[in-house]
Image 1 (cartoon, rainbow, N blue to C red):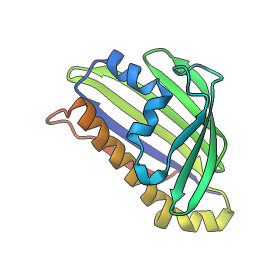
Image 2: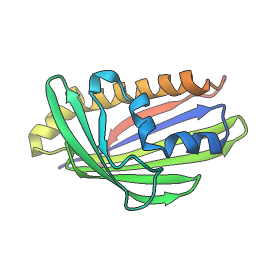
Image 3: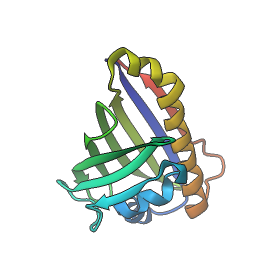
Image 4: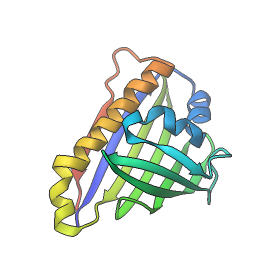
Length: 166
């Protein structure tokens, strides 16, 4: 079973505190997720991120395919980073690290996701055609939406890379 990695970096012209306030509130995830994903929080989003928090969602990764996704917030360093890990859901492994770094123009947000797909060789085959493209679309939407909400930083290139690491 292959291990994949997604890296997304985005520059925002806001303070680290503003970025943290937005990102550490689980209810804001819906605002930066494409509507066609059918993303709805079922439980666990009544407080800002804390270690041990369990959040349950429904999501439609593909048309007419709905699934329940349960994540646990496993690590939080206030204002710096948090980690969510899938407990139940569409992936064989989902480990998502969210970092914030203060930079001269504002803040750099970094998402680093390590993930594995279920279904062995079938999952590996589906990755470039379905999963990789879907993740690219989701993170491109997220980049556009965050730029709408907070603005863009001129002259700074955002980054989105997906690769196989094992």
